[in-house]
Amino acid sequence: MDSSHATDLRVSDTEREPVIERLQEAYAEGRLEHAEFDMRMHLAMTAKTRGELAGVLYDLAPAPVPPRFTRPARPGDSPWDGPPPTGEDRMLAAVAHAIGYPTLFVGPLIMMLLSGKRSAYVRRHAVEALNFQLTVLLITIVTFGIGGMLYALTWIVAGIAAVIALTGQSFRYPWILRLVK
Image (cartoon, rainbow, N blue to C red):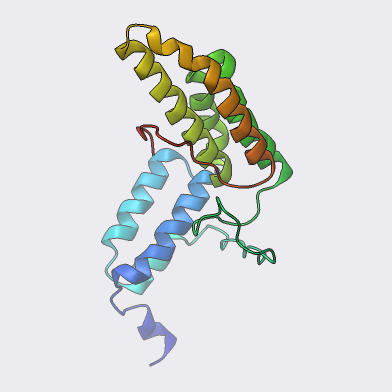
């Protein structure tokens, strides 16, 4: 079959997955505005042929090939960890945890919305910090302020999370509500 007919072949869900992942990466990198991201996601999900699917990514650079990890897996690593984060990513992820001290959930929310667009690593850490701060706030509200004593503990846990973020590893707070994904 020549290449002109290959674009006419129907696509499967398996063929759509890498295109959807690339669109998500491009959105996180800031290459796509939200409305355009939504439109392209719709087009990718409804594409019937390989040609239509290829058109969704026509002006986006291919995803960078991540360098291979040479270190053995460690506790806390997960199968969805991407390429090693840059120094700036690690610093911003640590800030997302530490900024919860003075701002409660507002700081991690801002970090997720601004820096999370350009780095999946920063977004994951900011989402964790946001969910942690929201959980502690909800406990404080439900217990009519008594849960506020947890805030002393949150400083310690968030500090540990910030240090782990600086080392380039994933971190998940235990026993929290995951309200934001």
